[in-house]
Image (cartoon, rainbow, N blue to C red):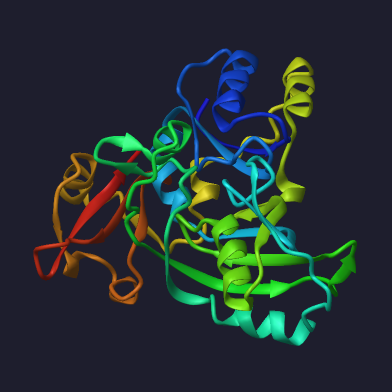
Length: 303
């Protein structure tokens, strides 16, 4: 079985738990996920199956959409509800929503984040959360990310000295959404915590495309595999190059993953790289510009 399972990860499980359960349900070993979701986060988690595991890096690089809640008035060690409260401040007067939205806008585009101590980034060969569990604070490397949008999704409310609101984030790979919440609070002069998070989309998949583990189990028991997204479908956003069957030498070169001259591509595709390459109507490779040889293209993935 080769392709993608658009899984809806429920709260209380790690991404690794999901992979383990999918392996058992489908009775296959070659299974991989496309980006860790914390146990307290639910949402879209594409699972790669068989040859589809070659798409893990490509899917991890795609844009993600998150929704959730931010609360002003306290901060935790983990920047979410998993940690211990380290700072509290009663919000006497609500910060105007317009002011909040303006501060959120300043956290979009190319920005630099300092990863939270409770994160999986390695420093000197050791993950930050391992230092944190030992009570050791270490200097954390700056982490450049791209945030397409960071905006309020509801009016804020002030209850018992804490101000909360719903938010939406559209961002690229590696963005720490809980750090966005923390940095927003710092910009506004109040402690802040991400109090809820859902991954609403992981390009090209949305919630309505997904199955829960229970739904997957039921589908498999009923011999229903209509949920499987083929490799071709997963890469449908890329331009396609169908190599004519008459080009036997070119077929052999592509079949062997050879570096090619850019000029062999149809002229209309030369400015649209990367492209998916089809031999005899079957996807064979994803070709892109060669990183060091001008006028050349090379496969970044072979199928």
